[in-house]
Image (tube, rainbow, N blue to C red; front, side, top):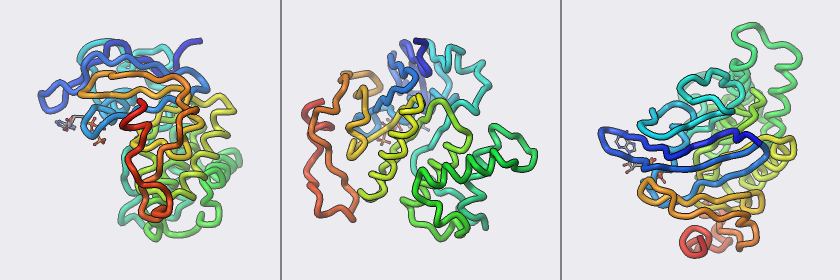
Length: 251
Ligand SMILES: Nc1ncnc2c1ncn2[C@@H]1O[C@H](COP(=O)(O)OP(=O)(O)OP(=O)(O)O)[C@@H](O)[C@H]1O
C-alpha cells in the first residue's frame, strides 16, 4: 500500500544549521505513528517539512505519492501545529473557528448542509459541541487545542498530523482525544503525532519513531504492550509523574 507520508533520507536546514540528517519515516493509511525524542531532536521540523513549511535540502518527501513541493491537495492533510491559540484577540465563536477549517474543501462559497454537518461532527468528536457558540477567547489552553483539532477534522482529511496534541491537556481531555483518534483510524485516517508522553494514546500507536539530534535513533513497532507513559498535566497530579519509561527507558 502506498504510504500517505514518506520521508526517505530527508535532510533539512533551519537558520543555516542542518537540523534533520537523512530521516526515513513512512505512515500508511490507517496507521498511527508517533514521533518521540528529546527537546530539539527535530520532531517539529520533520512534521513541518511534511506539510511543506520547511524545505527539504536532501532526500525525498512525498504526500500520497507526490513530492511535497508539487503537492497541492491540502484538503487531504489535516495539520495541528504545536501549541498555538485558536484565535487570539479575534471575536469569533468556537463554531466559526472550526468552520474555517472547511475552507480547504469548500473554498469561499457559503456553508452548505454537508459543511455544517462536518463542523458539528468535528465539534462532537473533540467533545466541544456544548461550547460551539462560546467566544473562542473564553476557552482554556487545552480547549483551544481541541478547537484546533476540530478545525483540522472538518476538512475530513485522510491524514492528520499533530504536533504535541497532549501538551497542557488534562487527562480527561487526552482520553477524549484518544477516542476521537480511534474513530478516525477505524475510518482509515492515518495519523502522525509528535509526542512527549504517549499517555492514553499509547494503545493506538502502531509505530514509535525516536529522533535524536535530527536522526532516527530507533523505531519500535507496536509499542502498545509497553506500560502507558504518564501524563504530566498539573491537573493529573494524582497520576504517576515519574519520567516516562516509554520516553526514557524502554524506547
Ligand atoms: N527557526 C529556527 N532557526 C534555527 N534553528 C532552529 C529554528 N527552529 C528550530 N531550530 C533548531 O532546530 C532543532 C530542532 O528543532 P525542533 O523544533 O524540530 O525540535 P523538537 O524535537 O520539535 O523540539 P521540542 O520537543 O522542544 O518541540 C533545534 O536544535 C532547534 O534549536
